[in-house]
Image 1 (cartoon, chains in turn cyan, purple):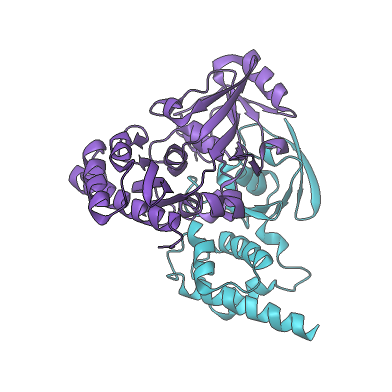
Image 2 (cartoon, each protein chain N blue to C red):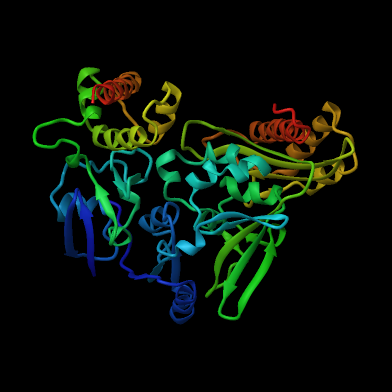
Length: 159
Length: 291
């Protein structure tokens, strides 16, 4: 069947099997391998992308269900060499070691800050509770999101 | 790699169209909404529908609104919207209690109330919430609508009153004076299934519990409706002694199985404790003393 959707601002159209999962459509059909394919059981959160601005587990969503919708993957964060503040925060606060969970964490926390620009540490922890990180113990991820929130607040004040 | 078996996909553009498709395609056709229960089952070949009817475009099924003495919730309303609903938080705070601990926030962006109820997994929270809240559901088929109370909704494990060619369209929740409600759950970690969970709703009049609804998740083959405990509470003034008796009944009337989440005696004990806590909070809320 034909699916047509916007991925990172670009309209894409492909003939796929109805059973193709969004994560495989993104990684294999589109070749965007930044989105990671992890547990395959909607537990780990490595595959999180945004669909219409909301974080969604792409291993538990059919590509067909996203036809006509707006999908954003981790590749959309950096623009012309300029990192998104959430990426800067992960860099500044060393919020990853192996990096496997990172694309899901970035897309989840980007959506958090878009909705709630000044989250408490508890709100950050709740937001990322659908993602599993086996390296950091989450402390540095929370710190990175805090860093990005502060950075965005300071930047907004300057502007 | 886990991939569902092949199926035909159809995007519904109207409720009547979706029902017509279900009737035309027969029992091997299934409705998909959030897909967070159905797709994992399809990956494991526990479900093998030949046709999926995607109802996600039916925006007319996504709402939470007051109509007379009811709150009506459309079947396609997502967990995140139940969690954020000020109307539900005001009148039926057990929904907010439950939604804070159902799956995780990312899953809650997709999963729906209709999907949760139709999945009818005994470990799922909203079936207990709706049972305690005395909900009715609207089921629509080719011959029109029928309204079914939660007591007649579950007909077995993973089985409901929704027949082939029918769709659950709405959940109706009574709003009555003197109401208080709460949901209590213990899980091993964020996003895991409950070890046990208890939903309680009470309706107070003149310092007395005029009616109560209590149900348990994850401690039986289906949602456990604690009718014996409800009977005990009716007409009584709330007290710690009364809650302790309800706790004993809950521990007796559930039928948990031993698994990785704990042995039977532990789960019985937990079901009792959670029932007691939920009742205590429900009564406190009814008396406007938030616990």
